[in-house]
Image (cartoon, rainbow, N blue to C red; front, side):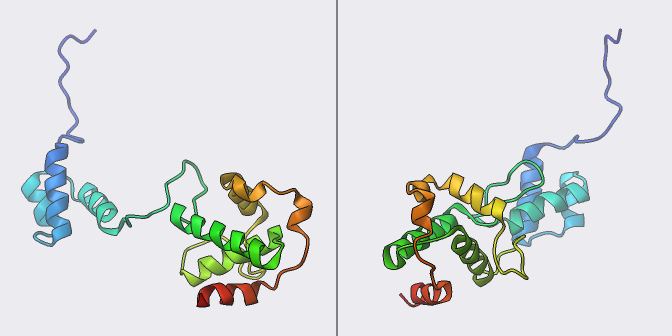
Amino acid sequence: MVRKYERISGRQSWSEEEMAKAVAAVVSGKMGYKLAARTFHIPRSTLQRRASKVRYQQPDDPKPLMGHYRRVFTDSQEKDLVGYIKSMEQFFMGVTRRDIRELAFQYAEDNHLNHPFDVNARMAGEDWVRNFLKRNPELLNKPDKEFELEPVNFDQFYHFMCQS
């Protein structure tokens, strides 16, 4: 049994305070990666990774999820979609799941978002709309028959909403 452990590896021998100072110096432009890594005694590759996370992170990024799948819209963008859908219901009396899928695709395209939606069909997938409706249960208060009362001219509605 080992009574006195001596660390052999030099991995992660830097402190978080030094890393924060180095990242701040790189992001502000005072130092480059190599100089900051040498000055604060941290690995350059770790500094690059940490600095890029700070530099390119948007304040309203979608919440990261565990696993393969990622969110397309932020919470505020999903609230906008819910508002569009509710106003469609007020003005045009019916919204189908297909209309929601087309609306989501058009919204993602207009906002230049990276999305996994089908470009040929120009709509979001069935799984996406199912999960969207689970996240927004206020859209499911009506029975499915009411969702399919009348077909909606989506392009006319979307341009109407963009003008107002």
